Length: 92
Image (cartoon, rainbow, N blue to C red; front, top):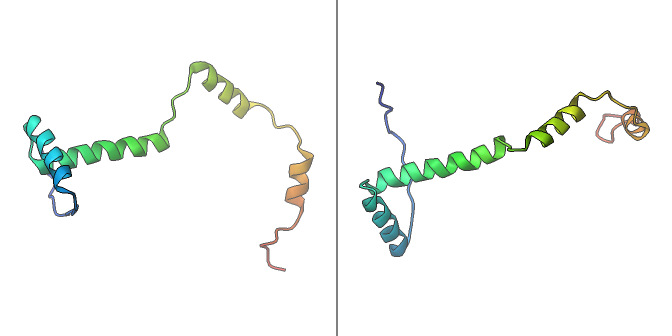
């Protein structure tokens, strides 16, 4: 088993009440404040990241989405006109 070297630090400033709450929770789980803070922060960070990457939908909604993705493209005159117009950002 390879153990990752912990060579980075994160400094946090907290109130006395916040520190006491964190310490009490860590103690209740039999963990150090550092271990508790790192584990809890990573857990929350992974939840936030997953929320931006994973979407939960019902089977019906997924089937509807897949039908829309695979449906034949229908002509859209407004979109054709838009793409036919030179961009205001294009060099003149």
